[in-house]
Image 1 (cartoon, helix red, strand yellow):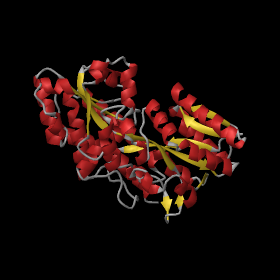
Image 2 (tube, one colour; image 1 turned 135 degrees about the horizontal axis):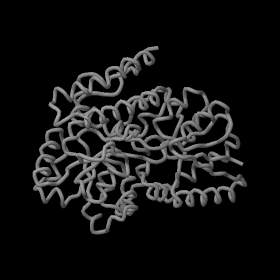
Image 3 (cartoon, one colour; image 1 turned 120 degrees about the vertical axis):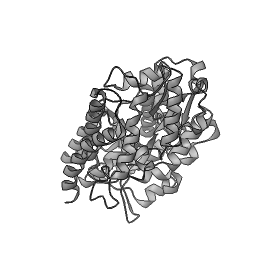
Image 4 (cartoon, one colour; image 1 turned 90 degrees about the vertical axis):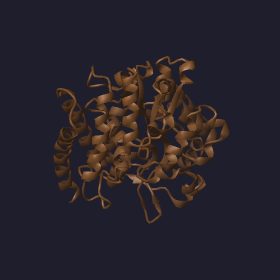
Length: 400
């Protein structure tokens, strides 16, 4: 029996996978067991599989985890022919390959499976009531500030994002602001950090300066608090991925309100991530696995699987007119995953992200414990004070 490892899935997603597994068994005689793990513990479970070379044959993993798994020498690369059987690299959106390790065009260690892209969600009627033009409100740091000033003058809380210490979404959100300012997380060689350079600090400061337009009580804000406030229309705008649509439906947002829900691209390129499929070196029944991959990339299955789980199809031909009509915001999501950017491809990214997440949470705590509005120079000093020591410690590892 083959084992398919996956993160937590909604019932709809499990049912769709089990139908594919049943059809696969009827075609090949090979049974497949679905083993799901909570996202919080999933990476640890995958590390155990890599170390002990047992406990799974194929897995759906976070795209930012792939490089570290490759460095553990536990994955089987996909052949050129296997990739061609799925339509080739060109059939997928380009940014989805940015953090998937490819050596000499021959070794592809993971296949994009479900896509995530970070965008700004807003309530169109709240912006209109404050005479804010959505078409120009989010295109730059200055335009965001001007739009939020106007919203605030109409007694509308403009903005909310998660401020919880252990929430990794802050790193993904910050990516757009850092890149818009001309910065990056790492140097091109990957041998040193770059998130504490002057350019990156410019973008990070602009992101954190939006705290002035956020709810002033209840910090630290977790997902339910921050996104719940947006779902209740207590806040005009927030940032999230396509999964936020399911969150809003689960919070009983009415159909009339859904018609007022719009998205906009952030000021810099959207963070693009999601999940990838990997096959472990110790996997058995490779011929059956290859057949399973073809079934998993059938457009009808994967489009429904992504739609039900709140993520996006990874291949261009899945974005049919019928699919785009399921939600009016999908056209802009398509633009986001077509032109966005992923996180750095480095075996150390998991460690980098963990340390940045803690530092960002500590920075939120410092900001909200400070009396009154912080002047720009004070905020910049707080940002640099949190990130520079983290960068210095990471550089000792990255430079080895």
